Length: 353
Ligand SMILES: [Zn+2]
Image 1 (cartoon, rainbow, N blue to C red):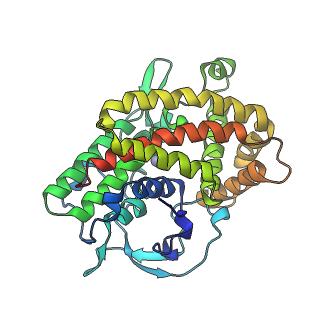
Image 2: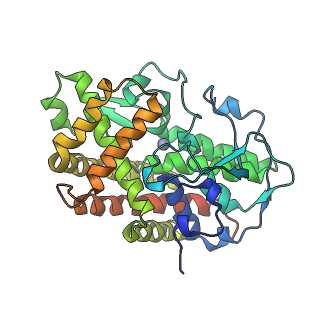
């Protein structure tokens, strides 16, 4: 089986690019499931009326419909860090008469939970520990004996919403909710979403709490910038890890639920290697980029975040970077194999064979 890179797939419009990590993960997962790739197109429909009862959406969220698009710009994939920025603009309500293949729905909407869906909500008194409502819904970690974040529920609720949409004769939203479920499930395989810092780091820095959060967040963001850049440059080992994992998950009789705790524990274990490796190899420089943030107050938050991301990417991938990235590549491939497995196991439960 030969699998193209998402950004080379002629079947995927340029209006939808640049592509982000979640979309690459979803893309390699669906490509590994032949029965899903050959499912006929479904009609694009409006979402379930009562979906907000199951999942209240952030005040700025709109269900956009990427099936209807106009291309307005051509962004540089290596310089785009905000998943809201795409080459095209999209319809703000369900376009009539459009059809789309289920696998494309799963890819196109896999990054949706990182837009406005989970922003600016009041969910829990401790949500600041996860950086706000978005983090709360996308993370799940223990710190000093307490547990923070609800990502496992985020996954389950959307998987159930998908079932509900299929039952009610709305397969389009069935696949779209499943794309969101796949997002939260992939987040739970990301070491930085299930652990914030090694205990030793916490003990060493316990009296500098404000700085502590910013340091941890700098490493988390740097890691995600690294993963995304690898996908965009067509890094073969990531594709191999995901497709091999997804094929195994597809052929397994186990459900993602039965493996969830083990999956999270494995991701937790990978965290220390990445965290300490980034500290060791890039410590001063990566931190400096993000810790300087406060002094550049002029621009708005997304612009500032984009500028920091660009600087971090330049440091991680620049010609005179201090170290090889092999230590990150190896542990990330292990991680993506697990992530692929879970995506394959999730998708097979919804794909008629
Ligand atoms: Zn997320």
